[in-house]
Amino acid sequence: MNTPNYPSLTEKNSLNQSKNTSSLIARLNSVMTQFWNNIWDWIVTHDDPKVRERFDRQGRRIGWQVFDPETGYTISFGSELEVRLWLEHRYR
Image (cartoon, rainbow, N blue to C red; front, side):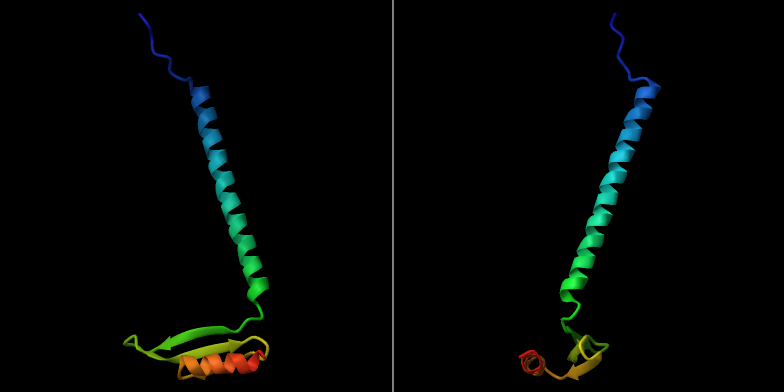
């Protein structure tokens, strides 16, 4: 009669520790990758103006807002065309 070959408790603990270590390393790698991506994004786009749409409480667009990191000012515009014209004039 053949008896099933079950792993011993030591082997089970070793497998669990190995899985936990691999999982921890994968998570740490993911966190570090995201950290360096954020640093890179900040370095590359730090001097770029930040443009965002503004909406009222009903969700209707009421304009555009631009933050200019060179001057530190935030400027509001009524249309996308005004934003484009300002950007072209500002960064010529």
